[in-house]
Every structure is written in structure tokens, then in C-alpha cells.
Length: 225
Ligand code: SF4
Ligand code: SF4
Image 1 (cartoon, rainbow, N blue to C red):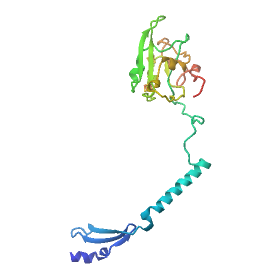
Image 2: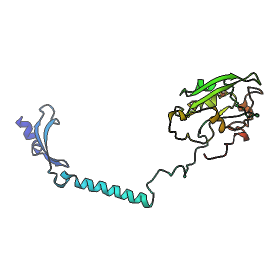
Image 3: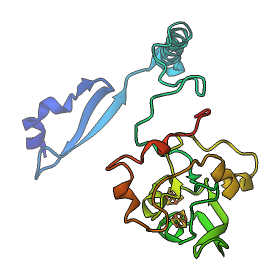
Image 4: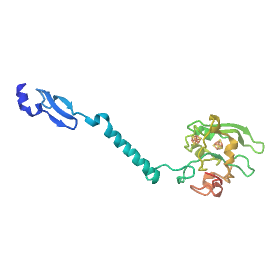
């Protein structure tokens, strides 16, 4: 043991690091790199009261406060809704139900959208139309708080009855039930769609202005976003 101590005598006196004095108490006979050391921390002095750290923290806070008050240079947020960011062209806004020439809902209650919806937030109760062989939704509800804005309902719809192109966010609600939009709410944003109804004349996606276009009737209704 004494042999090792003499070999590594410089360790015995230890060394000093940022944390304080290091004293080697023992060295392993099998592996000299394995040592037992004692760390004697430096007296902390003023650091003990955390005063320098508090002053540094308050200085950073005050600096940011004045920077953001007078220049807004460090502020990433915007004053919504007065200030609005540019949304991507494919942003999915609040749903709307499209209408036919006579103003009635285009939806034929085919149940494709509630089937595709991963959030199970669409409820449809179908009824029979009297003017044609088609069905229509007696009840059409979307729970906008459960919706994950995936757009699958729009993709699933065979007749351009539902869209998510309003660029409108769901408005805040005071009561849970108010987050469930009904057929009337959804049709308020709806406009006439001239896409082929009921599968006549082939696929409306192919005949309605080509890829990525739904024709002039697809314009977002006027009003606040
Ligand atoms: S956007 Fe997605 S989650 Fe929302 S109603 Fe449509 S299918 Fe359901
Ligand atoms: S997929 Fe279209 S037509 Fe079918 S129920 Fe949904 S909105 Fe109505």
C-alpha cells in the first residue's frame, strides 16, 4: 500500500478544482485510477447568501423588461386578433356545410365523414328527402373541441358537402355544449357549391376546376376570419 502511495504521492496532497480542495484518501491496488477522494469545498463567502446570483437574475429580468417595453425586439407573440399572421394556403379553418341551388344542405347523410373521423366528433341523424331519392341530415353536429382538424371528413365526402376552408378559428365558449356546432351553425358559413351532386356526371373532384381548385364558388364567405 505504501508502494502505491509513493507511486502516486502527488495525488495525496490532492489538487484544487473549481469546487475546492481534493485530497486522495486511498488508491486501488488493482487499478490506480480507482481512488477514494475527499472534496473540501471552498468557503462560499458572499455566494452563500446567493446575493450575486440574485443580482444577476434581476439584472437579466430588468434588461428584458425594458427591451420589451420600448423595442419589442425580444417579443415573438402578436396582438391577436388585431394582428394576424399569414396562414398557410392549406390552413384548415372551421367547418362549413355547403348548399345546393335551392339553399338546402348538400349533405346526403352518407355517413362517410363520421366513419372517417378519428376523433368521433361528428354526429349525423339521417332523414329522407321528399324531393328526391336522397337522404339529408336531420341532425348534423360537430364537436369542435374534440375535432383534431385533420380534414379527413372533407376528404371522405363524396359530394363537396363539407369544407374546412373558412380560415376561421373556433371561437371561445363559456359552456361545453356551445362547442358543438349544429347544422344551422355550419350552414351559416356555407355557400353554393356547383359540384356534381349525388355522383351524377362522375367525380366532382375531377370536374370541378381541376387539381387543387374547387372553382369560383369555393371562395371563402365574406366576414372576419
Ligand atoms: S377534421 Fe378530422 S377530427 Fe375534425 S371533424 Fe373532420 S375528420 Fe373529425
Ligand atoms: S361525407 Fe359528406 S355527404 Fe356524407 S355525411 Fe359527411 S358531409 Fe354528408
